[in-house]
Length: 455
Image 1 (cartoon, helix red, strand yellow):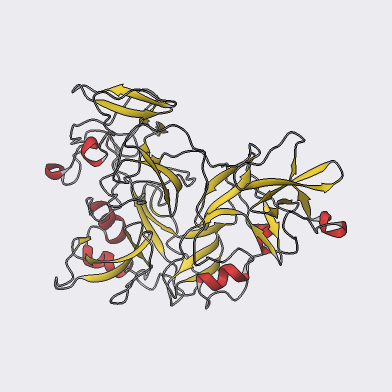
Image 2 (cartoon, rainbow, N blue to C red):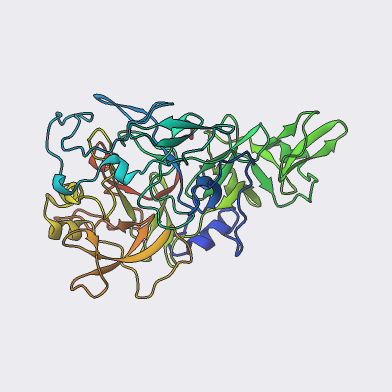
């Protein structure tokens, strides 16, 4: 992959334009989706990160909890059944070695139940199944909505329409626990294509995972890629029987040969892409990856940096920005990476249990007073570094910090001279348990040069 040079002192917006990836538009285009029958009181909301999702009448996103095999067992729902109970888990389940089951969980006296954090989507007493929407009988006599046989929940973290703070469908690997993911309608794309959530936006790919691209040299519904151009780019052809689908159309590339176009722009594959989900073709001058919609840009002044793992987000000084992730080891697999959750996990991996040491090793990324972004993915809030919890603005010692998906972000100052010194440093990548996957810190990687979409 040809990573860009000298991008450390440019904004993300400028970087994206330079990289050949379409810049963020003032008016964001929203992803089209397939309309299907919906039960009364249920709607579709197009979110900034996950695209279209199902939501209740107040706009709260619906999630499912797919079963995942963990090291010493499994956790999550199976189709047709819910395991998210109104019972407080007081001990860990021993699902994630090296910890045996039976250990008391942190803050157990105030620990909520699974159903309190993930309220079931309750149907009206007279609700009837419709299309993929069916009903699950709960022990208390109520009925819970299912979609495609998956029990549905909302998240207490979501406060307004479009929030998807409870979880993401972005591909993840390793020991991350059993996560909740948003549920939504299918993208309105031809059967040859699919859409994947990425840090840059909702990326269009072929069904087998290979990225597709557009060329600035083309005209509307007309390809100008011929001759030597075709050595590096393969037109994505449509079958004779293919018909327009939403924003997708076909045009006659040559007599009897039809090519797909998205929003009037011809679509191609990049011959030199070496892995699925690639952005490599977008490095070529005038060529762009295809997105149904783009994610909002990070705060002004943040930079995109070239590192050994790929393109990583940095603060205005060029220091790598890290997210903290955490899933506890109880049977209900509640997240512990949010300020509303117990902070003992984070304090342990960043400061040996000492909050003061923790904030020195992993400083919060501070936000200026009055900072605004105009989107719900990035925001600024006050935090109490002594507790790791949200704080009032006038609380002594409170810090005004940047958050991503309502979770603070950090840099790595390190200790005893070991920390991130140069803009390319990512010395705290995989810091914590299971390489930072289950309980630890990971750099905010926007473009991974190693991982494929299907890994």
